[in-house]
Image 1 (cartoon, rainbow, N blue to C red):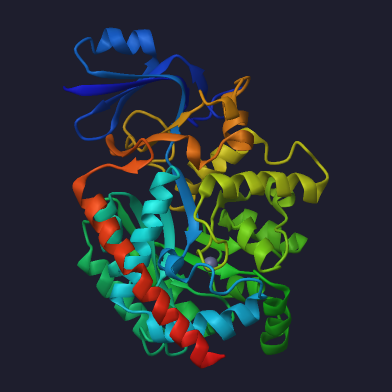
Image 2: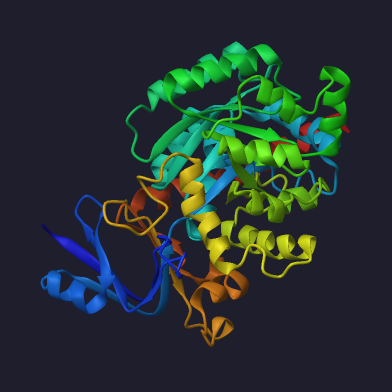
Length: 450
Ligand SMILES: [Zn+2]
């Protein structure tokens, strides 16, 4: 079998081993087969002996990790970047985002915004993202054109949107998109009831039944702000998570975005259910939503991934930067410098996120049989020297400017800070040329609303 080999100075397999939970090895190499899967990973000398004729890419001073996974975003909102800053969530939604979305969204908006988001993420070392938006078929086309991977969560809201009339119609359209993209490489689907305050009990029950029938996950914004908890107590007499628990949503396949405000019982419920959290610290800070209790969640054993949220509330889709903030914030908030250490932070962006998506058998670790979705981080630059500990260097000193190369299914998709391949180049330049048109449209809508 033909293979090619990547031989960096360090490999972080993120395969758990006793005393080395992040699987960091020096002078290891990765052999990749023609199917784009990892054929073998081991000491470089042994790999060279096993595959003497294989072309080898040697990367001195580089660390190779699994591709990063952005566990919560709204890719299309890249076109709304910077239009709704310095507002609390309630006003952010009602005064800016919803009026803009009502008039703007459609297949073209979602495609163009998702292309920009996908390009930004790829160049920053993110090889898969968990999206939540309308017109998932258009987001899927963007994903296929740029050559990365995604879980497309079909957005469901109980009130009419430009996309659909009610909860059932949102579900129907989401399922049609799933059918249209069936078999598309690298794409999975889940159901995304937007939030407890935009979705009623009946629709949540439909979602639970359908998720079980189809064997797919559920992705929902949960306990993002104090306001939604106060409102839920008034409307339902219970906090949102108690309501969702009663409706049967707390399952291992649940990805709960945000979870900023949790009491002790709620942390236990999430742990008992083996649900996952998409922690989005920049969005939570920027919208002044609060700080998620990451230390307590980790102690309880809750699976935690990192999400950027959309560009309208972050405003960058930089998974590594998000993870660095997550780590620092967890320490500052718990007054414990050992919380969410560098190794745990890398795990959250890779293995834990793949587990949350139910795709651990596809990617998230550098392990035989998994897809070769990899990032090479250049640690030769003076700004990340000297390297005492490559993982610590990546998390606390590194940035997306240190991405030297990205491979998906063993194929290079980023080299020298540029996308590789004619389709991604063409698509990105076409979409970039349309940005001024979208900019003008947003300006017109906002001036009419003001
Ligand atoms: Zn969100």
